[in-house]
Length: 190
Image 1: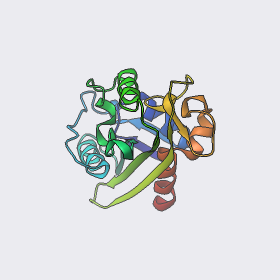
Image 2: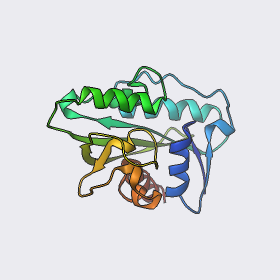
Image 3: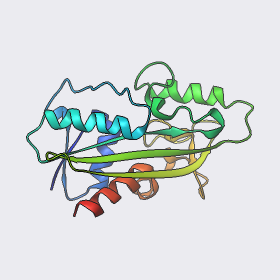
């Protein structure tokens, strides 16, 4: 099966290829180098649909996969949430995003957080499969690990003593929000 993933994010594309082993996973950038729809939605679902609809226009494929995901910290009223990739003020600057979050969390004892991914498989006929995955954990006090991307070096999944960035790709994908959502999409689409 060929999967066109509506992302230019190299970290997400790498994870999708690991999760969908045995399938061809292409980036929308292989079809439209200037793909960059404005994510103006207030929810992960709205942004995932915006990306899927834009991607479908650029391909002749029967379906496209998109996702919108981020880190939710309840004590910060859900921030960074849908603004996770630009939380620090510059889109896609992971180090700046982590730094701002750690500053915001100074002196806060309740460090509960979760990653959320809403994935959409949109078909040319307009039908869609929508699935959500979550991974619960806490925000650490400092960055640890060199794997993953985004907030992984400061996120400690429940039941573990390591950050997401300290896990192997297989360990991370087995419990990550994106891994959960993408596996649900695969189960439903077969």
